[in-house]
Every structure is written in C-alpha cells, then in structure tokens.
Amino acid sequence: MINGYVINNSPRSRYIFKQHVQSGSKVSLDVMYEKYKNKYRGEFDVEFLEWLEKNKVPVNFDIVVNSIEDAEVPETKKELVEEVVTEFEIPQGRKYNPSKITPKEISELKIKDNPKDVIGRVISVHKLRRAFTLCKDRPGKGTLTKLIKMRIAELK
Image (cartoon, rainbow, N blue to C red; front, side, top):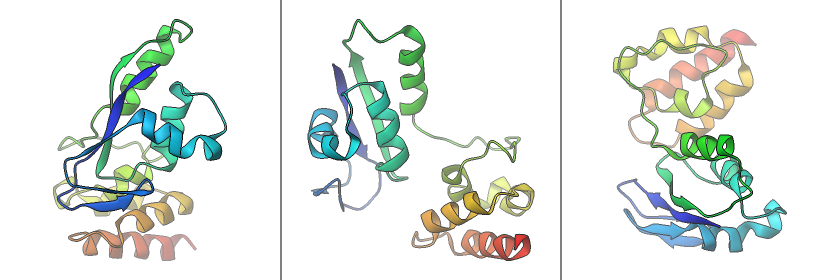
C-alpha cells in the first residue's frame, strides 16, 4: 500500500483528474487509483506511480509519497519512487545532455537557462513537439514557444 497524494502547485484551480482541484489542494493516491484503475489495468504499486507521472500529472502538479507499506517492493523500486516524486527544479547553470533532456524540462526552461542553446542541441522532433504542446498555452512562455517552433521547422 502506498500512502501519498498529488498536490496542485499552480496559482489557479484546474479541472483535472475527473474533478475540480483548487490551488494548493491535494488528491489522495487511493482516489487516483480508483479513478484510473480501468485505464491503467494494473496493481496499485510503484508502476502505477510511474504511469501516473508519465501520463496524467501535468507540469504544476507534484506526487508526494508519505510511505510505502509493501513487503514485496524491492529497495531499488523504492528509490525509483523517491526519484520520480521529488519536486522538479532546474538549477541555474546546469549542463544539459541533449539526448537525456525531457519535454517537461524543455517546457520549464527559463530565460536565465539560455533556452536558445539548449533547444538548439535537441535533435528529437518528438521531444520538441511534446514540449511545444506543454508550454504553448502557459503564460510567459511565448518566447520559448517561438524558439521551439523555429527549431522544429529547422529539423524538418
């Protein structure tokens, strides 16, 4: 059994996870599993958290795990869960590996991170399209959206 929740860190409330989630409010992982168990078609375990992070949790939401009460989960899986659910932060002056950067990281780039150079090194059109989708409707991401769009056109 995994105890935890998904928290809305955005300044606005959103209709997501088949319900209205206020800014700063939490949705239990048990509730999330009940809502998505037919779509996920698996057990309530570490793989569910990975699937949830990859497919359902948007940029401004974080998964927080309080405890894992399952004797069958190996220690490596517990470490993986701790890595998946930590709050995401891009430190200033970080060196990016273009093959390992994720669309989520691309969409959260700030002007201080020199996004023109970072995006210029990415050669995966799929990653760039996903990053474009993640940041096109977000306020303050107009310049980043233009840079991504230009890079996609460059690669085609």
